[in-house]
Structures are given as structure tokens and as C-alpha cells.
Amino acid sequence: MDPLIRDRYSDGILQEAQRRYGIDPERIKPLNGFESYIFEFNRDDGDYILRLGHDSRRSADLVRGEMDF
Image (cartoon, rainbow, N blue to C red; front, side, top):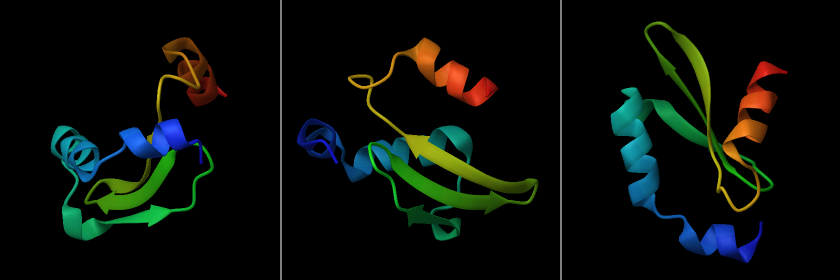
């Protein structure tokens, strides 16, 4: 992983994502990621993947394109 991305990540970022998306900390686990932090979790309404990336690598438009693909 790029040191710039690794050095800017903190548990506070994950905690904020959990708060925003209503993710129970007991129901999330990390997966391997190359340039992003990737997690899997589930809620009562289904199974999900959470990707935390840094905007130094991809613009918002590129991320939206990946999601559309």
C-alpha cells in the first residue's frame, strides 16, 4: 500500500464510516486491499462491502464509474 495512504488512515476513519452507514462494529471484518481499506459487513437487510480509499489515487468521478461498472 502507498505509504501516503497508509499513514493518513486511522481507526477514527473506520469508526466514522461505521457511524454514517449504521454498521455494527461486531459485524465488520477487514479484507485484503491493495490501495484501499476493504471490509465486509452485514446488516439485517443484506451483506455489504465497504471500501475506504484516498482521493490522491482516484477522483470522485472515477469511483462513481467503478460503482457503475
